[in-house]
Image (tube, rainbow, N blue to C red; front, side, top):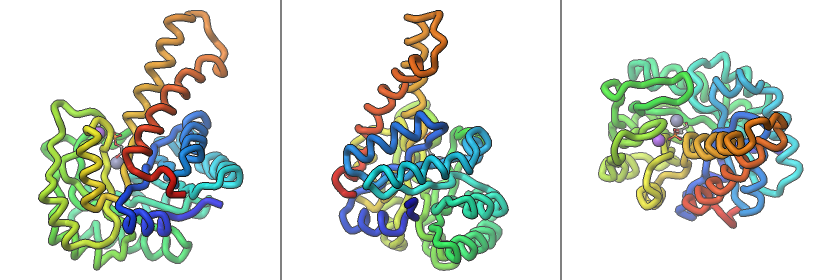
Length: 283
Ligand code: 13P
Ligand code: ZN
Ligand code: NA
């Protein structure tokens, strides 16, 4: 069955590896992720943003998740990514999602705490694990657009208080990554991560991990990152492969034909990301 993230995070923390969280959008991307995770014996998180849920339907995604969980012998978590509304989170928890991010990072600190606490209360009563963000990532993720000047790094001492007051299960940190692609090389503030880790002992989450050099991500995992979020690095090879297929077959119209190269291209990246996280063989 679909699980929450508690056990997988606990094992990842002890073993100093991370669980990859892949943003999926439809049946095809869902299939690639679960098939590949199963082949590599990796626990896996499938993340849906509000945009994905309105595109695919939360009920369909949970149904696909249940089929996958019965079919494959690896822990599979369905996660609500960057949800800002407690009503929506409650609704999709009732559908069967077992992991949720409440993103109240745009609110003033006190209000962020208040909203996150309410989500934790409901979620924990339903066996659902909760992630929240302190500080704010820049960049573009679906409808979430944060200008660089509005991005804000996580304050380590505040993070300690935030975790204690909210009772969250994992904390998303802003340490220099951004959603989408970077203009230059990302500058990751490893010292800040180290300081956060010294105050906070729950699993830490790295958003915006696409387009970050692999050694950098590996280093953050050694320093306490337990969940690595990947969206853009999957979308690009998928769509590039489909575009190339249409260039070579301009009259193609069969989705079973033109989607297949997209799935194959995406699969290669899913393999690389699982290896980067070190979660292979951990299921
Ligand atoms: P990327 O856009 O860098 O893949 O970030 C994904 C993410 O953080 C999803 O929440
Ligand atoms: Zn994110
Ligand atoms: Na990114």
